[in-house]
Length: 243
Image 1: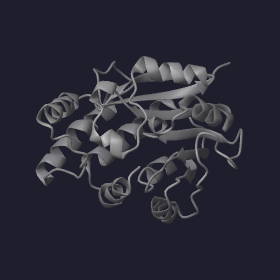
Image 2: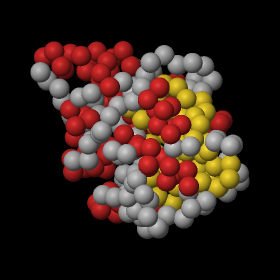
Image 3: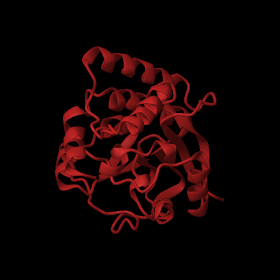
Image 4: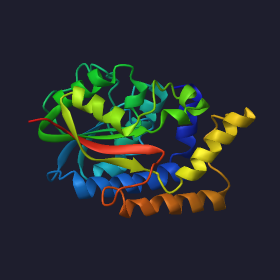
């Protein structure tokens, strides 16, 4: 990712509506569907500045990987121990058959060979382990945001299922999220394209709007996985090794 993406993440990951509400949605999804053992061993790959680590630590002991040095330093301080720099797709030096859950939250789209990356993750799972995957949805929503984030693709549900299947995994509870705000996001992308003002700036909006978006997105913590969601900005699933 461009340096500015990490800088904005460090500045806004505790206040921006997308980060704060998303953590709550992911927390409740994991609590309902991941069926983790007590004191589970968890690995977050591509943890950025570590803004999800405290949430994941509610479910067990967490290790993390981040390849950007500045973001890794921040994440290491938040985690209280060194964060690894092992790169995808191969994950060199990461223990195999070691983790009850691996979290890759808006990461797989950064990897050219997504199947190889998912395969390496599968090898790192304990028996009964699973991979928590979140990716951006809808290739037609491609924008400057994807460019500065160095994305290779946005996913359809069928495309994500195909990559998961090719890696020897099966998706569970796969569906959209960040759906309630999707009409606004889609309209903004279309308007930006039409006006030539496709902007990669993802700084938070004014405080009242930030709070409103946070409240709307947070409502999805009660819905995701329980009911079929309408098209959303992102796709979420738990992937488990095939028998």
